[in-house]
Length: 315
Image (tube, rainbow, N blue to C red; front, side, top):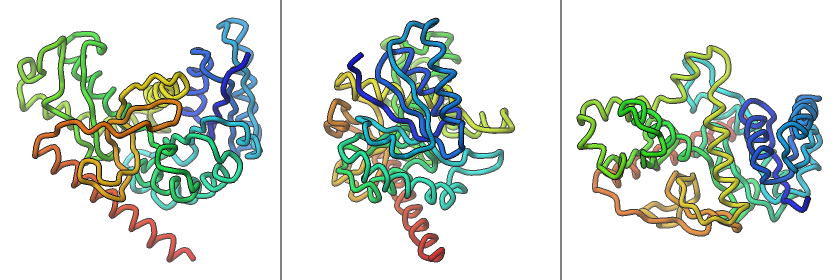
């Protein structure tokens, strides 16, 4: 069947689950790549054997050979170390940069026309690194975090109000971390503002839980980190790009003046289509939301600078 090819670098829980969802939706032929010998091949073989049962029309291949990147229209990078209990996303900074940097260079060399979605933490810094090391234009490099953070917020509000999550509209911008920026005034449940349905103090508790959503799951699992919702977030972005839907989703992208921010990768609403980021959507923000977004961006800048210092000292 004449479908695009999506390559997922990293065949762990997020990568394999994303591959499964892409296959079930029939979006693309899939290649899994992982440096652990046999891991990608084994998961691809297992997934391909579900095709007769599920009836999906896509092929699934697995390999440890990065030359398989060459035929990819879209590449998702989930490779890297997951958080362990007590670790912050920034604790992964240097370790995951040493993984993502070389992968981004290989992508730039082997699949120079591809669109790149980064999932590895600390997300915003890894997107910045991948953009520089791949040499790709800003519309073809983005990070998945805002879709996940927004989904967590919607799920918590739906649980509190005992409604379907599809009845809740909410969006989270900013960095994927403690300074993420939930757009409080834009949270709508069944057409009504959430402020008329949940007391302000309780809503703040829900927003705090959203900010710590990943850590809560890490603490419960003891080993590994969240992957079902993360994979769903990836696939929502993949579908918007491959189907050229023009969906507006929050994504970590490079800004050049939008929202008053310059030279930083941060989560903002974007319209996604066949060229990747078709454009950044500038929503009207309150003064406090703008201040929070600027603080979030400054934290990312500091992390990027810290990484540069770490890498300089390594050499």
